[in-house]
Length: 293
Image (tube, rainbow, N blue to C red; front, side):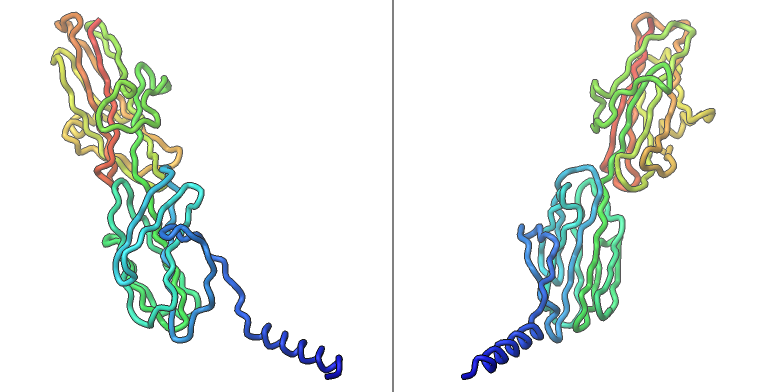
C-alpha cells in the first residue's frame, strides 16, 4: 500500500477518535469513599445528583449522615476541604428524597440547589433537613447543605467592662475556675462584674441568659444591660439577646452591694448560663463570686 494512503488512513482514524472521545471532568473529593475520580457525561435517559456539604465553622472535623432514596451515606467535613460532596450518577428519571440526620451542636442553615442542564425542580425543607429532587433525563442537580456549628462564648471580668476577661474561647456547661472571677466588697459598698457574650459560630444567633444566685442573702445582687435593670428576667431565664455574630459582643453588668450587716467572709455567687437559641443544648457558663472584706 502506498505510503501516502497509509498516512491518510491514520489521520482519518485520529479524527474519528477525537470526535467520540469524552473529556474527563475532575470531581471534588468523595469523603464517604475517601477517593477522587472522574465523571463521564450524563448517560442517555439518566441524571446525576450531587449532595454537597458546606461549612466554615470552627471544629476541624465532623461527620454528617444522610438517608433516603440514594441510600445511606456519610460526608466528612475537614478544615482543609470545606466543600466535600457525595455523587450519584446514572440515576433513572424520577423523584429522589434525601434527608440529613440531626447532628449535635450543628444547625442546618440553608439548602441551595443549582441544576446543570434540564431542571425538574426541587423542594427544600430546612426544618425537616431534607430535599426532594424531581430528576429529568440529562439533569445534573447540585444540592448544598450549609451547616453551622452553634456555640455561645461567655467570659467574665471584674471592676471594669474594659478589664481582663476570663473564659474567652473556653466552653463549659459548668462554671470552671478558668471562667470564674472573684472580688471582695466592703460593707455599704458596691462592686461590679461584667459578663461578655460572643458568638463563636460563623452565622447569626441570639442567646438566652439565666443566672442562679447562691450564698449569703446579706448582699444585693442585680443585673443590668446598660441602664436597664434586667434582674427579674435574668433570674427567670427569660432574658434574650439580639442576634449577633462576628466581632459583635454584648455585655451584662452584675452589681453586688454588701449590706452593713453582712458578716465578714460571707459570700454571694452568681452562676450565669448563656444558651444558644438556635441549638439550646449548646451553652457556656461563667461565675461571679463576691466576698465581704
